[in-house]
Length: 253
Image 1 (tube, rainbow, N blue to C red):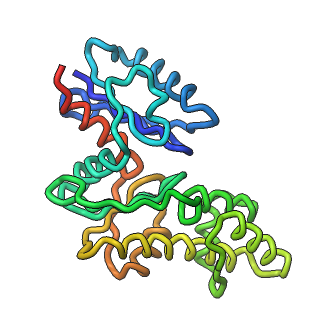
Image 2 (image 1 turned 180 degrees about the vertical axis):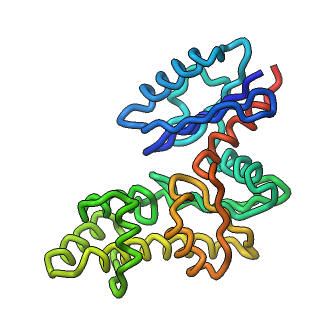
């Protein structure tokens, strides 16, 4: 039996498949402009792998979960990220997921979600904010973080992404270096993540998931600001999809 988890985020879509209880296949797709389109691409991939309605259970999660017409069930990303993180870490933790559209802090206790906080009212403090600021500086996210390592002394004061972008453009015009601006951009995101984490009392075992989980500079800055070790995994970006696949295993037919 195949248990399929599909996590359609605003930026990237992740696929994770268990064959019985063994990891079988994984993939990352750019979500693009249409969640329906990427869902159709995944359906073709499943067909090519010989996975069909009779030998699989499919659960969709994430921003575009309603765009997977062939899913047996949809589950919230909070539940799926909690399950996926616990599977990867094998112990209770506080999940930090800096997603494209929102940032989630999830406390997992005894393997289950005990509490969560989301920053979903504004793009500030999310991966989308980082992407926009990188575009403004003419680089990608990886290059922005490399520049930020060499910078210091700049603070982004605006709480709104639109105003923050204007602030960055003004800094460029005033001659501030891209390295210093990049440092300020990353610090702005880390500060917002810390603020969300402080709403979770007694937190420990911080675990970073999502697309930034393999970015060592982000990990180091989080550790510095939180005053605690931040754990990651090579499969951290798949946490939501893994959790969805685990939810599929719980469905009885």
